[in-house]
Length: 281
Image (cartoon, rainbow, N blue to C red; front, side, top):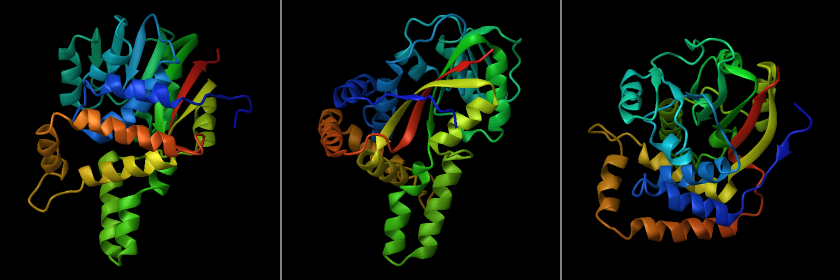
């Protein structure tokens, strides 16, 4: 592992400011507003500029929220429907519907790259990071968020069901959760750093996100949201209308979020990480 990685710890105030910002996008989807709040707070310590590559771009709404001044952005997303949403958003000058290990852009033509919660889902992570490095100019910066091994290790719902004596149901819940998120790379922080280094990318900074108590509640909420209903769809389809019927929910959930932040004792051991990375040469 690269020896001189700087670690920055967020403050509770920064994370709550992040929630206030992202709640405008996801007011009644607590797994999203919770996780994205941490990412937003971390990205406020980063700067991307010039020609920007957004790897796993999605519909562009979150990108625009974080980087409202960015106006020279190229997106990449292998899901054709999602890529089409990105094109229609007006955020991107172009969106390539391709896997990220084969980006159809010339060498050394981007000043910055961004990959929000996408790298952990990509099967050929070495190839993907190599493509990002190839597309960046020497000294170009990558700002990205990923999940760590704690995402799997701190999964509460399967553990609770297993403790209740329903081992087969617990295994099915964990399997479905992993399949839904397609977690190809839930790596330890040091393994992420090594992966960047092998691609010729140097990690300048690591910001841990979602320590133990926040992580436990987040993984539980997310697991429940995505439990598959017997009749089709997921439990989020039932939960969301209930939450949207109560306009007080976003403000009330913020108070729960604030309480979870007060409970944290170790802000370095986390379910996620935000990295500031640069191309070496």
